[in-house]
Image (cartoon, rainbow over all chains, first blue to last red; front, side):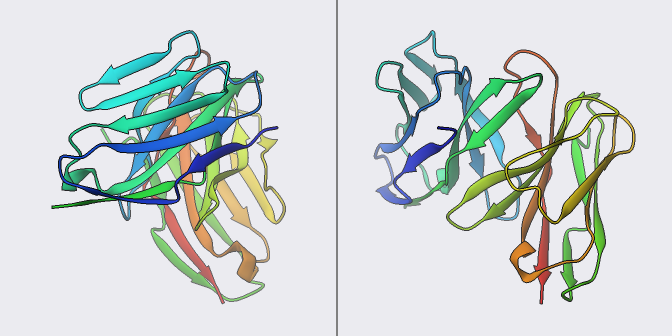
Length: 113
Length: 113
């Protein structure tokens, strides 16, 4: 019930293409859904986040789509660039005194030049 | 602005040895966290501290202890290292309340032989 299932495990996209990463959850107590981007040798960094009262959030080339009834959310990277090559983690959090986060297993994205 | 600083960056231990991973943040955050990252398993919460003076177990606490030394510092101790603790360890911090994102350090890569 506390899991966040992420797919695909890896993704190869041509430059200029659209990258799509999907996540699903079970626990309806989750109320914050961030995506993190991680480059080799670095810690994850917040990319974009959404709350469940919104169905879509866009920041530049990055968009989160959120389907509350299906308990699914996805990250879309438009016009993918080689510099987007990284590992992406979805996460879900809830407040149990302090916010705790459950992470998906990660998607390794490679954008070909 | 350093953010979250972890030391050391790399460490090799023999089975049974002990060590302490150090973490400090300069963002005046109340909450601090320790995660481990393993291939195909995402980030798993080991321990967290909602505020100075409090600590709680996460998903995978066995074999670890923590100390919230003050508001800035949160250390992770391995009393008797095992090969199963070979991993990359990340410290993170966040403000308390609301959907505040996690800020990660750059990790400690630990190998136990």
